[in-house]
Amino acid sequence: MIRVTEAAGLFAAFLAVFAISARYRMKAEHDSGGRSWHPIVWGIVAASLCAAGIVAKSGLLEAMPAIVALACTAVCAATDLRAGYVFDVVTFPAMVIVVAAGAIGGRAEEVFVGGGTAAGVLLLLFALSRGRGMGLGDVKVAAVIGGGLGAVPSLVAIGIAFVFGAAVVCCALLLRKMKRDDAVRFAPYLATGALITTLIRGVSQ
Image 1 (cartoon, rainbow, N blue to C red):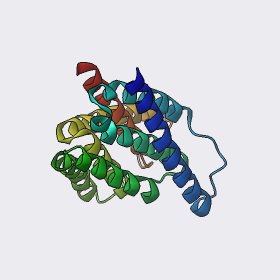
Image 2 (image 1 turned 90 degrees about the vertical axis):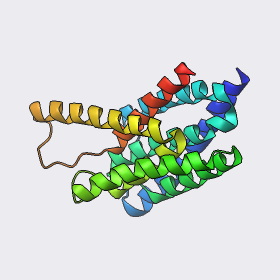
Image 3 (image 1 turned 135 degrees about the vertical axis):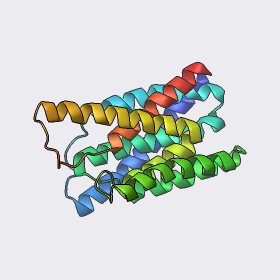
Image 4 (image 1 turned 60 degrees about the vertical axis):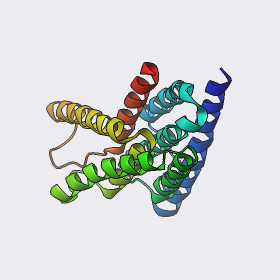
């Protein structure tokens, strides 16, 4: 129980730091800091808080990269939905913390392989779509997810993100809630994929 409480506290702390950084950047560049988070984001945050507690069963230090990744993706989902951007002031510090936690826990190689694999997949898709299907911000979010969860789980998370994204876009097109040339904000789907993968991984441990 103590370990779960500590994991929840760490998640909340990282979430607050990332959210404050994102809020400052949005106020400075987009003047949208006064609006509240999208209801979907609050759902992601609540579920991620539970996932952080579950994954901490394996040990707080071992779970640290995943906890940071969950907090980072939740904030990136919020900024993407609200302003259409994923900010470096969130993803870059998250990458540094994930690498540091992995190195301290003796998992530096796993972190680098995971981050490189996930980022490489989305970077390839970014290049093939010439930036129309997703942005470089999504690539950075994928790098954090890969470093936090590992290579194979991050690929599962990306797969889930694409399935959810495709389903939502298809429904929106059928209901005429969006047009074919409308931009798809992908960070919320990446956050959902990371969350589901972490929950499955935590429960199966």
